[in-house]
Image (tube, rainbow, N blue to C red; front, side, top):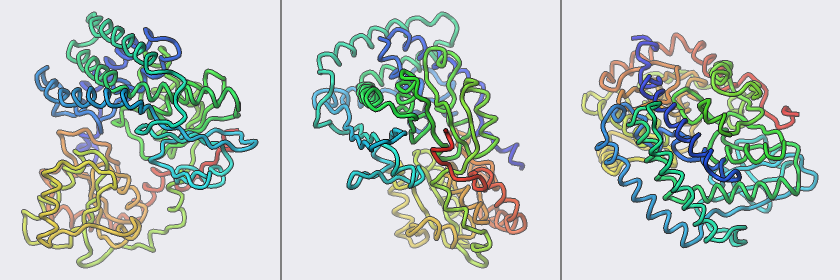
Length: 485
């Protein structure tokens, strides 16, 4: 089976594309009815920031089902959003903002606290070149905290806007005029309602006001954001546009069409969704993909991301194929369904008996794993048939004969080291899988396929490494902020 024939779960189906368009239309109408200074927040909601990691409604097992399964899926999330929103409002947890100004800084960097560290007035992050990190001013925020300095708006003003949002939501929810299926419109309505109830929009509003205050006083030449089209970036791009300040960012991980949040609809762009002026990317494939969705004034220079620049010094010959009984490394990522697919792969091999190689499992530090699968993993480890991978990622890959996964960029990194790469596919779930390596449906995964992939990689190592370097932009110069000038 070829990659093209098997690459089904990594494709955007007509049903998903139809839903994208409907939710983009819903968001555009919703945003256009909000106060002008608040419109950018509408593009931070889940109907616009379309995230298959967070919402099941984008996966094959949910697409095309009726209203009852939708309510069963969204009901608990709505309840959680309502309770969390009340708590957020009462405790006034609308985000904590740490401003780190720097004399004569020409760039303002913006990043969430979970992907950077602040220590002694400095920011440390692998998403930016160290010299650039030290040269720019920073705004670091934590959505889950309360700002000790308070907020420019009181809770009564926030509540007033909350009511305006609810009124606008009701109006748009009942405005479907045959230009979208009622089911897709209902999805857009439920996702937007959940977002309003959660008060998460208030955090993004406060972030917008904080960015606005800094830009007004410091007037940097550029605004830089970690994460290209995440909600906080969308706010940053909109606020910078208000002051005619150009914006720049760098691709931070692999980009494929099924990462839906990267691809706004024309109606969202027309309604005011802001995009960066310059977005450096790893490969021409990403350039070509973005050209289909972004306005003509967005530029896409090629560059290597700082977090992957370490692979420039790595040669596959340093990590040649592990012979004999070298282990098989299963690597997971963030979404629950990715980790379920990976652990099902482990389970399938164990069920087949006659274990040919040691099995290692390496989960993402922030991985979401359903309770029952956590228990099953613990049982596998207790049986002695499975071990958890510890130590550095580079060592884990280097010592393995083959790396198995579904969505993780560990697969690209394994290819760079000349390793066999085996990509699991599960048709129920939308996948962000790489096109590298051997693709195999989960229900066909076996020890035979593992050994076959190892043998194949041994003969095609040079080509696999080349493709891995292309996908991660390893042969381009490392991205620097001054490239934007």
